[in-house]
Image (cartoon, rainbow, N blue to C red; front, top):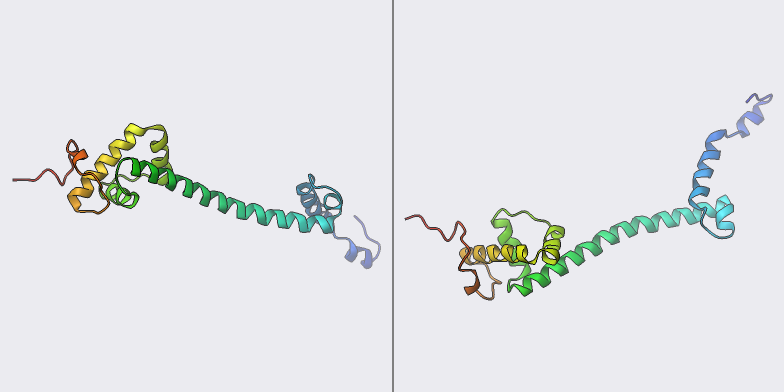
Length: 150
Protein backbone atom coordinates (compact mmCIF):
# COMPACT_ATOMS: atom_id res chain seq x y z
CA UNK A 1 0.00 0.00 0.00
CA UNK A 2 1.16 3.45 -0.84
CA UNK A 3 0.03 6.28 1.41
CA UNK A 4 0.12 9.86 0.22
CA UNK A 5 -0.17 11.37 3.67
CA UNK A 6 1.10 10.43 7.11
CA UNK A 7 -2.44 10.49 8.54
CA UNK A 8 -3.57 7.64 6.31
CA UNK A 9 -0.41 5.68 7.20
CA UNK A 10 -1.08 6.04 10.93
CA UNK A 11 -4.75 5.07 10.62
CA UNK A 12 -4.04 1.95 8.55
CA UNK A 13 -3.59 -1.01 10.86
CA UNK A 14 -2.68 -3.44 8.15
CA UNK A 15 -3.58 -7.07 7.63
CA UNK A 16 -2.86 -8.14 11.22
CA UNK A 17 -6.12 -6.71 12.49
CA UNK A 18 -8.07 -8.51 9.78
CA UNK A 19 -6.68 -11.92 10.77
CA UNK A 20 -7.07 -11.26 14.48
CA UNK A 21 -10.72 -10.36 14.02
CA UNK A 22 -11.23 -13.26 11.63
CA UNK A 23 -9.91 -15.70 14.23
CA UNK A 24 -12.37 -14.43 16.84
CA UNK A 25 -15.30 -14.41 14.42
CA UNK A 26 -14.40 -17.93 13.30
CA UNK A 27 -14.62 -19.11 16.92
CA UNK A 28 -18.00 -17.34 17.21
CA UNK A 29 -19.39 -18.80 13.96
CA UNK A 30 -21.89 -21.09 15.69
CA UNK A 31 -23.33 -18.36 17.94
CA UNK A 32 -26.74 -16.77 17.30
CA UNK A 33 -27.49 -13.14 16.54
CA UNK A 34 -25.05 -10.26 16.97
CA UNK A 35 -22.72 -12.44 19.02
CA UNK A 36 -21.87 -14.08 15.72
CA UNK A 37 -21.41 -11.02 13.49
CA UNK A 38 -20.44 -8.04 15.66
CA UNK A 39 -16.78 -8.22 16.66
CA UNK A 40 -17.04 -6.24 19.91
CA UNK A 41 -19.79 -8.54 21.18
CA UNK A 42 -18.27 -11.70 19.74
CA UNK A 43 -14.91 -11.13 21.43
CA UNK A 44 -16.55 -11.07 24.88
CA UNK A 45 -18.52 -14.23 24.19
CA UNK A 46 -15.50 -16.05 22.80
CA UNK A 47 -13.30 -15.13 25.76
CA UNK A 48 -15.98 -16.26 28.20
CA UNK A 49 -16.36 -19.54 26.30
CA UNK A 50 -12.61 -20.13 26.35
CA UNK A 51 -12.59 -19.64 30.13
CA UNK A 52 -15.36 -22.22 30.49
CA UNK A 53 -13.48 -24.66 28.27
CA UNK A 54 -10.35 -24.31 30.39
CA UNK A 55 -12.30 -24.93 33.60
CA UNK A 56 -14.08 -27.86 31.95
CA UNK A 57 -10.79 -29.60 31.18
CA UNK A 58 -9.79 -29.42 34.83
CA UNK A 59 -13.22 -30.60 36.01
CA UNK A 60 -13.11 -33.52 33.59
CA UNK A 61 -9.78 -34.67 35.05
CA UNK A 62 -11.15 -34.35 38.60
CA UNK A 63 -14.30 -36.30 37.69
CA UNK A 64 -12.27 -39.10 36.13
CA UNK A 65 -10.01 -39.35 39.19
CA UNK A 66 -13.09 -39.59 41.43
CA UNK A 67 -14.60 -42.26 39.19
CA UNK A 68 -11.40 -44.33 39.20
CA UNK A 69 -11.10 -44.04 42.99
CA UNK A 70 -14.73 -45.13 43.42
CA UNK A 71 -14.24 -48.17 41.19
CA UNK A 72 -11.03 -49.28 42.90
CA UNK A 73 -12.55 -48.71 46.36
CA UNK A 74 -15.56 -50.86 45.43
CA UNK A 75 -13.30 -53.63 44.14
CA UNK A 76 -11.16 -53.44 47.31
CA UNK A 77 -14.28 -53.71 49.48
CA UNK A 78 -15.29 -56.76 47.46
CA UNK A 79 -11.93 -58.39 48.29
CA UNK A 80 -11.98 -57.34 51.98
CA UNK A 81 -9.14 -54.83 51.96
CA UNK A 82 -9.20 -51.09 52.50
CA UNK A 83 -8.21 -48.83 49.60
CA UNK A 84 -5.42 -47.05 51.45
CA UNK A 85 -3.92 -50.31 52.66
CA UNK A 86 -4.19 -51.73 49.15
CA UNK A 87 -2.29 -48.81 47.59
CA UNK A 88 0.35 -48.80 50.34
CA UNK A 89 0.94 -52.55 50.07
CA UNK A 90 1.22 -52.38 46.27
CA UNK A 91 3.76 -49.57 46.50
CA UNK A 92 5.78 -51.58 49.05
CA UNK A 93 5.77 -54.51 46.60
CA UNK A 94 7.05 -52.16 43.85
CA UNK A 95 3.86 -52.60 41.83
CA UNK A 96 3.46 -49.13 40.37
CA UNK A 97 0.00 -48.98 38.81
CA UNK A 98 -1.92 -45.73 38.59
CA UNK A 99 -5.59 -45.20 39.38
CA UNK A 100 -6.71 -45.65 35.79
CA UNK A 101 -4.95 -49.00 35.37
CA UNK A 102 -6.29 -50.28 38.67
CA UNK A 103 -9.83 -49.19 37.76
CA UNK A 104 -9.59 -50.90 34.37
CA UNK A 105 -8.34 -54.08 36.02
CA UNK A 106 -11.14 -53.93 38.58
CA UNK A 107 -13.77 -53.70 35.85
CA UNK A 108 -12.45 -55.75 32.94
CA UNK A 109 -9.99 -58.16 34.61
CA UNK A 110 -11.47 -59.19 37.98
CA UNK A 111 -9.18 -62.23 38.35
CA UNK A 112 -6.08 -60.09 37.82
CA UNK A 113 -7.37 -57.58 40.35
CA UNK A 114 -8.03 -60.38 42.82
CA UNK A 115 -4.42 -61.52 42.39
CA UNK A 116 -3.24 -57.97 43.10
CA UNK A 117 -5.51 -57.81 46.15
CA UNK A 118 -4.09 -61.11 47.44
CA UNK A 119 -0.53 -59.86 46.99
CA UNK A 120 -1.43 -56.63 48.77
CA UNK A 121 -3.09 -58.53 51.61
CA UNK A 122 -0.08 -60.78 52.07
CA UNK A 123 2.26 -57.80 52.10
CA UNK A 124 -0.03 -55.96 54.49
CA UNK A 125 -0.05 -58.93 56.88
CA UNK A 126 3.74 -59.28 56.67
CA UNK A 127 4.32 -55.57 57.32
CA UNK A 128 1.56 -55.24 59.92
CA UNK A 129 -0.63 -52.80 57.99
CA UNK A 130 -4.15 -52.08 59.17
CA UNK A 131 -7.24 -52.49 56.99
CA UNK A 132 -7.17 -56.21 56.19
CA UNK A 133 -10.43 -57.86 57.20
CA UNK A 134 -9.93 -61.57 56.50
CA UNK A 135 -6.38 -62.86 56.82
CA UNK A 136 -7.04 -66.55 56.13
CA UNK A 137 -7.75 -65.96 52.41
CA UNK A 138 -4.13 -65.32 51.41
CA UNK A 139 -2.32 -68.49 52.53
CA UNK A 140 -1.39 -69.38 48.93
CA UNK A 141 0.49 -66.11 48.25
CA UNK A 142 4.22 -65.94 48.90
CA UNK A 143 6.09 -62.66 49.22
CA UNK A 144 9.56 -61.77 50.45
CA UNK A 145 8.25 -61.30 53.95
CA UNK A 146 6.84 -64.84 54.20
CA UNK A 147 10.07 -66.51 53.13
CA UNK A 148 12.44 -66.38 56.08
CA UNK A 149 16.10 -67.27 55.72
CA UNK A 150 17.24 -69.83 58.30
